[in-house]
Amino acid sequence: MVAEEYKKLLDEEKSNVRNDIHSFHRYFGKFIPAIPAFAIKTFTNEGDTILDTFCGSGTSLVEAKFNNRNAIGFDVNPLAIMASRVKTTPIDTEVLEKTFKRLLEDIESDGDDDYEDPYCVNIDHWFRPEVKKDLLRIRKHILLIDDQTIRDFYLMVFSAFMRNVSNCDPRHVFPGYSKRLRALDAEGKRQIHVMSSYNNAVKKRIKQIGTIPNNSSTITLYNQSSKVLPKEIGDISLVVINPPYISSIRYLETMKIEMGWLGLINSQKDYIDLDKTLIGTERYYKKDLEQIECSVKIPELQEQISNLKRTNPKMAKVVAEYFNDIQIDFSNYVKVLKSGGHVVIKISDSKVRTEQIPTHEYFIKILEQQGLKFICKFKDDFDPNSRSLLTARNSYSGIMTFDWILIFEKP
Image 1 (cartoon, rainbow, N blue to C red):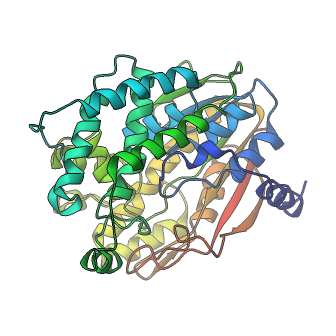
Image 2: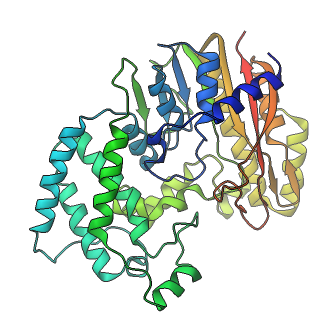
């Protein structure tokens, strides 16, 4: 096939009704489901195994589950792994409904006012006193559920709905008490009913869980970097990934409040330590800039890093380490991908200060150096109605309007 034919297949997939479970939990930067669905249906058969080393909230894993493919997902963010697990694990909806009835009874009969706040910087800025109290009661009784699978389901519902009862504007990517919400509050027009909101959120997501097929496919998750893959991983038919963009969105910050409430981070140190592990992190300090080296053998990339060294050493470090990490990841694909297997990547180019980084072109060169055959590339335009995709990244990275879709094959 040529690029136009693959693009047509993707566009056809976009016209299909997406699985409702994808809307279980907001997560910035995730795949649109059509991309992994297109890749899975085009390049794999039932029973094959796909790999996503930047699985986020599990979009590609959900598509694998619904298409009866096995899937393996990696992510360093524990919230991403929990969301992925919940969205791909069938649970008896009658059990969930019975558990919810008991949960509500326990919450309503709890007269305790002495709760320990979770880690959440400026918690009283983000939550009204009565809202915080209700959230603490809900959280307390969820954590008392014995069955981990059911407990994780209710924790993820809790995480998914809490922003709607907070002072964070749900229209914004990053937490922020916007002028819009402040104006509504000043006029007394924003009524927050925590328990009814939670009740609706649970009922909606129980229905979503009920759509997960109870088929023979297995979903395996690793809350770790994919720089070193476990020895048992192999015979992969498809790698489908949406890596972080260089110097774009502070992904971790978008979910910092939810992670604190779930106990996935318990201090600023936890947050910083986790941020340092992300590919594309900007968490570098003066001593880190003493050594800036990129092991990727692409002269144009080396020249751009040298240019950045002269004007902004920190960003030179960010770009160098980004491609160092990507190269390691890509080399792992070659090792575990079976002959005839494919790699499908969604990626956007980036502007780093004055340097326009053609990320997709460097990806092609790196994977060709690793021994994969480049098949084609084509542009995938963003939905012009999407606030989350057509978002200004930071003051020097601009706005993305399309991604590149890259396709490779292992000879």
